[in-house]
Length: 151
Ligand code: UDP
Ligand code: MG
Image 1 (spheres, rainbow, N blue to C red):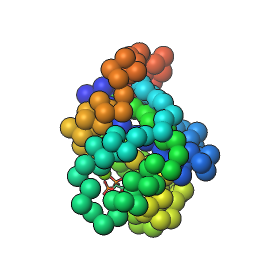
Image 2: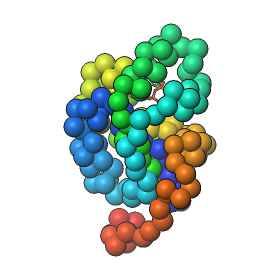
Image 3: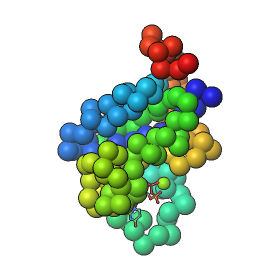
């Protein structure tokens, strides 16, 4: 089960605010393995597909503009329970409700500027990874520290 993958994105505010390395460090320090990364300007079509379940929400137009407002750092992180634990590292959707120590709890205030995205289920992680990355952009390797992270 150590090969579960999750899609994590640093949203345009996180990139603009220089939080890329700080957010990546949370996942690296935990022990997760980076297997895909790109800095990209997402198209409206991609974002409509990514947030397909939210298109009817009143906040959707604002969300779309937010996600179109600058480059996004799209990543795939791999490891045991990466999807669920990735969400824990992110914190609650509303940063004011996110606990200190989480990314949103430490770096954000407004829900519409919550600096990061993380897949909410293994099924959605697979869909999101396929949407944002070509199969050849995901790498496979064994970190030298693997046996010091997993028993
Ligand atoms: N969002 C918003 N207003 C809301 C709820 C959500 O602007 O009232 C934005 C916010 O950026 C959030 C994204 O829409 O991260 C997707 O919402 P979701 O409920 O999927 O939250 P997430 O999975 O990102 O925690
Ligand atoms: Mg979501």
